[in-house]
Amino acid sequence: MPSLSEEERHELIERIVSFLRDDLATHAESEGRDLYPHVARLLGDPRATKPMVYDHDAIRQVTARLQEADSQDVSLLQELLYGLHALITVHFRKEEELYLPLLDCKISERPDGPYGFSADVHQPHVLNP
Image (cartoon, rainbow, N blue to C red; front, side, top):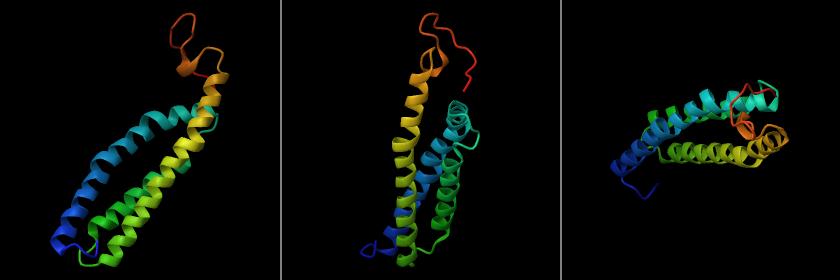
């Protein structure tokens, strides 16, 4: 970052913010709307996915700070980028190492098969945690 010109830094930050706001935020909204309520039901507690929602909020807040940051303030830009990297990395690790194994256990415990479909009938039904 320090070796880039101000124009290059500005363009890089614009590309990063665009990715975070367009691609990553869309993914997070989809998780919050479609996946997390289902996961919370499977795990039996509506608060089960709150830490993930808090991560999304924190990522949005740091993204907003990054977008507003002065491209000449290399120190602040690096601080925000390292912070985003840490938040996103930990979020993905929680998904992969905590939530997915819990879901695998819950799904394998279901007598009717994964995702609420009966192995015999292949008809969806209401999921009960």
